[in-house]
Image (tube, rainbow, N blue to C red; front, side):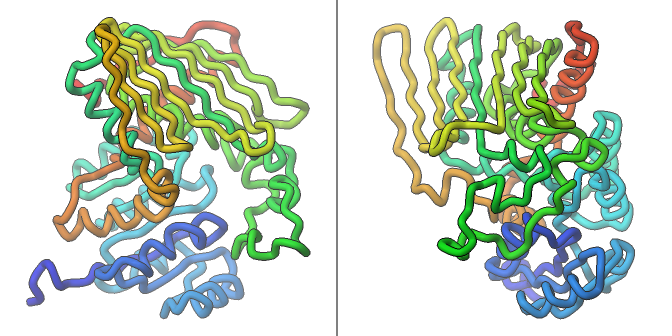
Length: 368
């Protein structure tokens, strides 16, 4: 038997679309101890081309084909949100370790079932949120856990990015204002389907599922306290899904959270900020620029080193983390419980926006 440090892990990608080919296939191909044995797409023509282009031996059109591959240990699932639950459940039932794209599922009940199933079967389960691997996010989490901020009173968050065109059903190049003639290198290997973000049946919703899933998971990652109440207002900006979202969240530790997110930033103005204010200190986290400051009540200020750009949202980190987990070389940097945390915020926000009422969130206490 090969020593653990030398063995390889057989992996596959289910849903080799835009993000699967942009993040998960490269992640597995770059990992020295991962063996990418299969990719799955809905048609054999697409699956075969992807397999040939990336040097993957097997092309599949169904999840069952993938899961039947001998000695397969893990899968990355990057299909559309409406089938995340079905595909992740099938993989977990088959005894495979999983990295699952966000949003985790469409409902809290689905997400809870998947988390419970992975725990029952002693399987590694990662939610694909690259921001959790940002060194300053990790330092911010440590700061909060250390008690340096004291009792956290207020958290303000802003998350914006240029995806409003996708919610309107535009192609990615149009939505992102890419000139295909002048900048063909900016066109991804595969483009998302026009319905992947604009159809609520496929996507679940707009900004709330697509991007607040990141922001809410980051709230749980850094502050480590459950949501207990959510009040939300959405503006769809003339589309079938939400584009502008404002959430007011109360956490179990008493902190009051203001979370604003939208898909229409000004050019070059993408933001992902989290500011936490406690009775003993304050932390200011800018994930886009990799900046973290801590200020205490005595006017002392600590500024943390800014990581290189490629380390701020490392798209390959979740899938590579899964391989390292299987090899016993790492801890889970983005556990699926954070995907469940985000779903609790998302589902409550959807209900609140629909009813105009404050919504109580069932306690889960993953941070107790």
